[in-house]
Amino acid sequence: MRAFITFLLLAALLPILTSCAPNPDVRTIWSGVSPDGKYDATLTRTTTNVVLNQDTEAFTLRVEKRGAWFYTTDMEYNSLVEDDGCPEPAASWTGPSTLKVHIVTRHTSGKLERRDDDLTVVREYLLQPRASVSGKTP
Image (cartoon, rainbow, N blue to C red; front, side, top):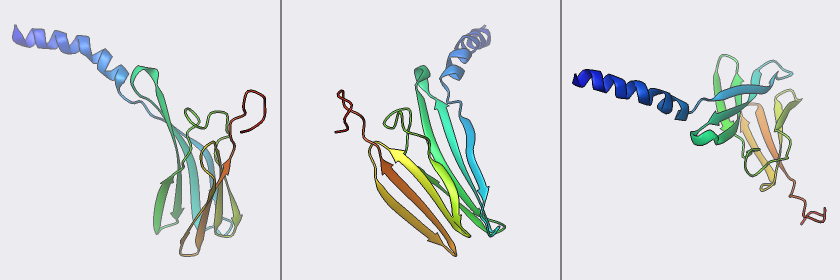
């Protein structure tokens, strides 16, 4: 009898527990091979439905040197919270082994540069402040 009651409780709670579990949706928004053919890069957007239909979003850049190593780095961007209305990050190869990622945000500006072997990855953050009620930026 105890096992049957446990089964009924689990059967009743299972739909509730699974609806609260994160269910990530990972989408590639850009992918490209470097002009020299040594590197592959992918920019992905991961949206996770957490509890009570509150989504979270993360953008990640993965760069791989073919047959050798790879690294990933997160972008400081969240269109669901702080950066609503800003375009998604965009990436492009600007040289044989130079990758540039443009990130428009409401809170960060500047440039980060990473060098590994002959690879250079530049993350450029462009500030787009919110428009005030009068239509002018603060």
